[in-house]
Every structure is written in structure tokens, then in C-alpha cells.
Length: 241
Image 1: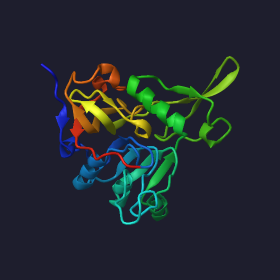
Image 2: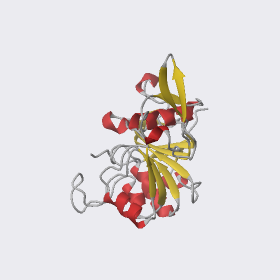
Image 3: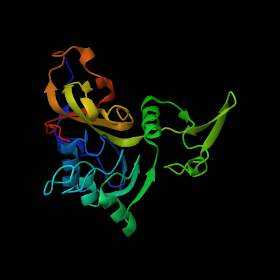
Image 4: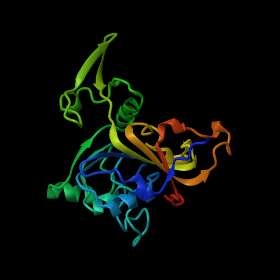
């Protein structure tokens, strides 16, 4: 019998508790699962650690036009739900630095490629990734985002940083098309961080714009296998940039 993993957005966030760590896909609001973000805001959990590329957009920022709502992680910042963000760059959302200045939020910056690979290592049980990125900078000597000491390794006369795996309690991702088993693909720029985050959490849940039946599309159409996905939320709004 075919497996049907479809649930509602509110069911998707039912297990999220205060203080948990969430990995959220997307890049500057592009490819972020908006319907799940909205459900998180309704639930009202607090003191979250969020792993993401950036802080999304605040209401009225030029990218989406004055008067429109915040996008992506910006909604969580508006609701003061986040204590710590692990991200690639601060982005353009002024709420991040406002809350940092107020002392209600901290953030750790991780190079974008390094962040993606740390998440991928966490998803597939790797011990970490070796990279030269950050050598000769405070990244080589400072503790990492989880307070772990950095390790350097020399291979064939070349020095590398060992970047350890990164995992979350929940990964909330966005798909353009998915089937009921959770096989999915994300179109164009919406791939950002949705692919490397697949499987990096105890619970990986996707929100999809289009839902198809199992077997309706050739399996090769999908980029990410449903074995990495616990649940599927139908009804993600049409992607906007």
C-alpha cells in the first residue's frame, strides 16, 4: 500500500517546542516554506535557534514592495521567536541587528559553502568536512556555532579546518513539486538550502506548491528522495521573488 505523508501546516509544527533548533530552507525569502512559517507564528514558540542562510525580509522592504508582509524568517523575527541564528550572512532584514543591539538575539556567521556542507554532513552521518575556508582568520581559533573547539588537519602538506556536522530538531523546507511519499524538487533559485538541509534534522518536513500522486511522475523528475522526508504539507503559495 502506498504511503501518504500529507499533513497540515499546523500538524507539521505541533511537535516544535521552546528552545528547539530549526533548519529553514531558502535564500532571502526565496524558497522558504511560508505556510509552515505562518504556522510557527500561530503556535508562538520562543527561544528558537534557527539555521538558515539569512534573516529573510521585513515588511515593506523594496524587494517585495511597501505594505507587503514580511517574508520567510522575517516573520519569526517580527514575533521575537528567535534567540540565535546560525547563518551565512546578516542579509538585508533590519530586525536582525535591531534585536542584536537590544541584546535579545545573537548570531553566528558561517561561510555559505561551509554551512551547506556541515548540514549535508549532518544529514548523511559524516564526521565532518575538511575545508581551507577560514584558515588564518578567527574561524580557525574561535569556537564553532555550537561551542565546539576547531580542529585543523594537515593532508599532503596542506592545512584544513575540520568543520563538524550540523543538525536540527526540525528541518522545514519548500518544494515546487512533491508526491505523497515526499519525493520532491525545488525549481530554480528555490533550491537554495532546501536540498542540503534535506535529512539534516530529526524531523524533515516539506511544504509543496504542487502535490502529485505517487507514480504520477517519473521518479527521475525528483531531485530529493522521499526517504529523507517525514511529512508533506500541501498548499505552499506560488513562489514569488
